Image 1 (cartoon, rainbow, N blue to C red):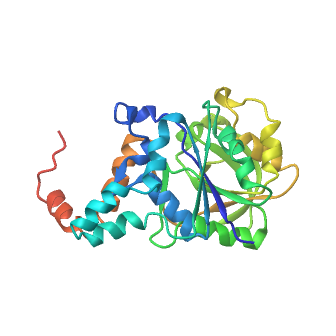
Image 2: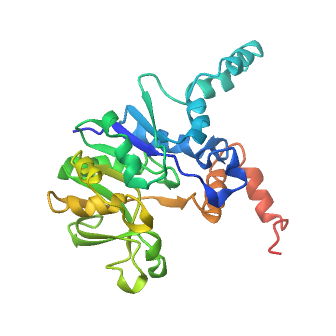
Length: 292
């Protein structure tokens, strides 16, 4: 079965990037010449998704504008015969891709954001992509990898990676039963455990394929860590009803929810960009970059 719908929870305030995010959503911050959110939607489309569901807040309406028609800009580019640029802005969303938006009125956690999209998803398996986690595999993207695993196991698939033991209190941490080099059966999941209590160093990162049974569990879930409805807690309950698998993906993850992760992503994507790569390398090697 193919995964045709993906949820993008983008209602967060982006407080770690203030004052930049006072007006501009963090998902609209650029990585070279595209906003973070566009990398996420391209990954979904490359994986076969044809319906993009954005869970937004009132302050995130500029995300909608990015994917909408820019008639004034388009007309100006036509008049100036800048057809290459017109093609760039016209191809942000390919033909046949549906966009839907649902508003999350209060920031009640990732689990609540996913639940907000229940009506749009219906009764089929779906993906959840957190744009803050940019994953670069130099090919089709992490979600494409996960769809293949989903089709093998027909169960929810959660992307994980090993983290520093001191960082387990920043993630959902899983314990697993080994199946193959990259795929395991999840035995338990704990939200943000202290390092001395963590069952492993395998951390959940921002890619999920979930079966629709998760919605009933989310709807009946109380508040968890931080007083929020945690998707981790619903996944833990899902283990009582069906198998859940973890997948250690190929690729490099950049935590663009942090300043350092965002800067690393910008630098590494720029070093692959044909327009700026040579000049950036020259700058980095010139001695002009000083550590003071």
